[in-house]
Amino acid sequence: MVEERGGWFVVNVKDAQWRTHPHFGHGCNFEMNGRFEQTGINLRVLAPGQPACRYHREEAQEDFLVLSGRCKLLVNGEERELGAWDFVHCPPGVTHVFVGAGNGPCAILMVGRRPAELLHYPRCELARQYGAEAPEATDDPRVAYSDVAPPEPLDRPVWPLD
Image (cartoon, rainbow, N blue to C red; front, side, top):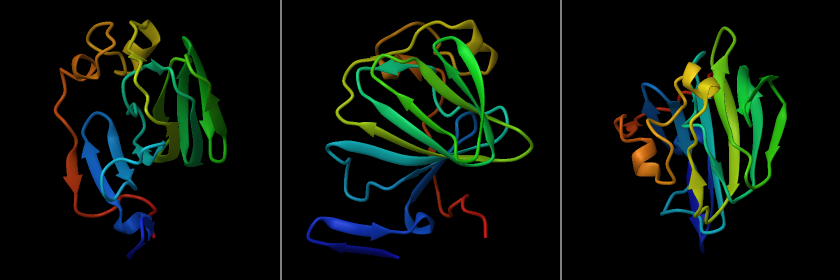
């Protein structure tokens, strides 16, 4: 159910906008009428081995909370195992990506400051091992994702499963 009044709204995960990508998993976007001006927030649901996006860094702070399942955090060239209720804070300039791990799906709440104008997608052997490296080092998201199709809309949520 979506309830909107005077700019504020309430939306359940089941009623939010979901998208899917064969390489980057499923995503839930809570922004109902365009992008939020100050904060981006979404859910990502990853199967084991699926990266959430390309390995990148930006000039904005980002925060992440693993809600369920297991994943790997690739951060500044290092790898960390994470599980449900692990929180990750990335100040500006921290290079990172999440990759699904374990035996089932992993759900991650992702929050970032907007506008995030300065992005960089570096070369990284570790990210390459997980299919999270951009085709070339770039500051342009269009180049970073030039070798994959855009995500497709989903007509149903994939998480929570109940």
